[in-house]
Image 1 (cartoon, rainbow, N blue to C red):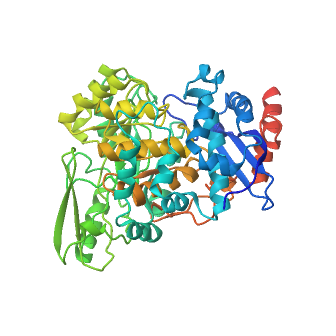
Image 2: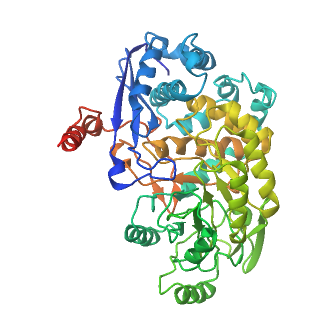
Image 3: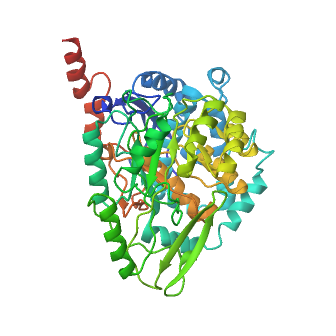
Length: 553
């Protein structure tokens, strides 16, 4: 039962000096200090529960988001939590439509990041009071109540309230079975924490080796041209050939250009640095007979300098399961690739690695450059090019998408899309084939719900952006809900995972066999350890006092 009047809202600037180790570095963000504007909401309820929320930043500028949260506080203090959730759409609109603050938005930038932090705290508190993890709160919620949380302003030409209700109603069918599947197997993940741009070659090799030992079966390769290491998206003549040479000589990647078997995209990845783009080499599972698996192991080790083929038990989705010794083919829509599953009914068989690459330009290119340089790497059959140009350029994305379609290359974007309107237009313009929501860039759960529903209407798979500070903790709830209640599909779907900073959270993510396991603790998994917050508070925390003093000396 929702209860209590909000009596206090506090916000803190929490920063982790990740730039010192090159963690999180990419072509556009070369020295990020993973940070958060961390919000805590308290009420006068006797239960003493607190709502914790955050929005992700990269260091400098976090203080600006903190100021924006403070500026919005008057919309929250002394409000009854029951009144907020009973008219969540109205509360959302009050935050996003402040007559003066809206001028420095609207619904974008610093003000929207601050809105996300506050709303994330409200959702966390609501879920805690209901005694459920947020994904379960959403799954159990009546479709009409879910719809009432969404602000449909500006998107009714694509998604009306009745459209949303109809989608959620259809999602009720098979929901129990899908929830049980998530509880047992989790949601497929891929990882990008193996090799950031700032990592040395030795560190990259070490982390990729450890990743394979941990059961991750893919690599993300960044090429280093003869001129020296460059950022993703930078121009280097002939580096597609160098990338090919590097890829073909890398562990578990010699068959990259062969096109053998194809791929199933709802699986993990690991990274290395590449010259003009980020090449993601995905080792995709196939279920083989044990005899075939042994033969494959020998072939793999011979081709890859003795590196072992990692084998993990994995059952294919039920839709792919066939009678003993039969093969089912499931074509990945629009990409000319085929995923083959061969198995025995009722038996978990070994997983065979297959190569797949994805590319990420990190917003570095103009539209013609994106088309030209991605086309030069088409022979390697990448699944997608991620953030090929400015995240605001809908027509640019559409042009890139149209140009690359004959090559079987999709476009993925979304982690820096401001709001539901940008996503609406990307979908309308057929400008993306993979949609990447972010739990802190959009206006919290409320706005993400609208985007998930629009993606379902357009039948575009959602592959969320995660990583940073707490993004994995948050987005796992959204994508698990999406599978159970909205999309009802894992086809072409996976959720990013980055293995950084989880130790600072009270309830960190749980990854098993490269899958997100549904959180069990009540809330939005946003609560940080107080000791970590105090040590990393900027600029007065212990960590920053020492660092700033050393910089002065």
